[in-house]
Length: 428
Picture 1 (cartoon, rainbow, N blue to C red):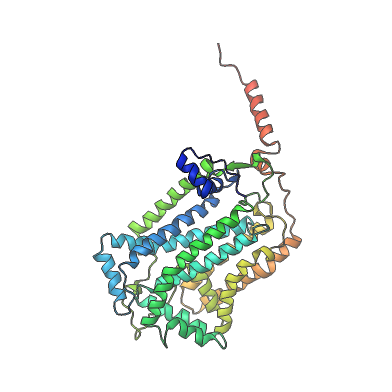
Picture 2: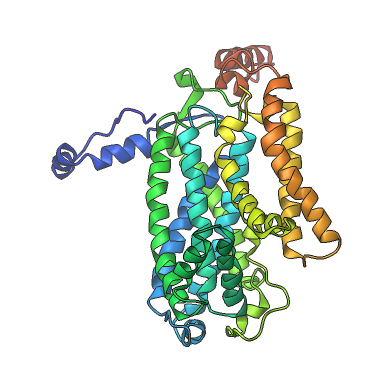
């Protein structure tokens, strides 16, 4: 949990504020003095990277909304106006559009890190559930944002995805028509998606606050998967982890800048530079890359209703990982069998993404069904059984032992003294 605040106001104004609204003390205890496990690696920096990306997306999105026109006959041309006539409009759009891909790239690393190190296990179940809520809101926000340019892929992607709700018995048609605002994807649909796309990022920010709050109750997990026991196991968040997060963010921004300035359209579909035409269907309708694994699951099921249910189940099952994984050991570093199946699961998810980008024909259909089967088999069968039959490696007694060896800091200090005593004198 958050460390007791050691913040001492130095001015009369600061003391006055602290006695009435101790916000500076709260920030100090949560982001300066907050004790973190000393063995956190660079995979833990993606939380800060994601916070930065959310702020970046909100700021660029608000500015773009000032120039965008959410009207079916004007939306496409308003995007061209932003690109050509607005000062640095091209930069704002490329930062925002590619920022969505970088956001999902970072969140997938964040999720797989949590799965590998067992960060969903008690007492962090609520933290994990809030993370899945954020992920679902991100998926909804990204999908609605993809529709706004009102190109061919935007229009037909919206048509295909929203039509899926029609497969739900009894309420499917009602939900579909509610999303459309009529009987087909048209101007009312565009207005709805624009309003929701503008609203949802602020909802994400609210859930992120809860996510951070839930993190500060038990504290961060760590690569060893064992809890902090002594002060020697921890380091304050600042300066140790602020510097580390800052370095990782700088490296991430270099990659982000390279995409924006050198390959800004690499992840975009060429058909989306053609204005939406309800009378002309693109040859292959594919969603953005970060939806492709779930799109492959949807297409692998012959029944439309079952396909929709399995697609949503693929996401919902992730929320139940704290209960599907029956092992008492968190970190895959001490679970050799789990580590093997984890990497098979990662490869399976990547291959599902590739299959989702290919036309649904021939060998791709068969492979999609195989990879879909393995996805659910891993989560529903292998994960629970591993906790029963796997023999984990012995855990270290503490985080300090995992970092410094069995003798801890004292052993390390003793070894240093011994080396100093045995080294030849440099005097004389």
